[in-house]
Amino acid sequence: MTTQPTIGARDLIAFACELVMLVLLVAAGHGMASGWRGWALGIFLAFVAIGIWSQWMAPTSARRLSNPQRFIAQVMLFATTALYAAAGGLAWWGIGFAVFATAAFASRVRTDP
Image (cartoon, rainbow, N blue to C red; front, side, top):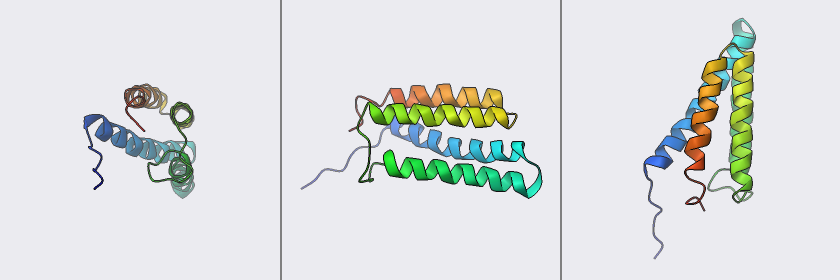
């Protein structure tokens, strides 16, 4: 019999960071261009992040990176999100997100398989 992995507070915070990253990318795209082009750019950026995450960081991915490579890739994705946010006029939101998300995922590195 296999045991189900337990989901703790750190896991929920990490998942919330993933969702905030997507929202921030959409908002950044909207800040970089006006009208529907901004929304399209933001949605495109979010889909690129989803693709990267699903290939190399998702728990069910066959290509999932092992730590510490996965953590490095996550930090790079958070920093890239912060740069896009800054380009969209949301510099402080981007910096705050990158710092908080990096800390949240750093707290999970040793316990994350």
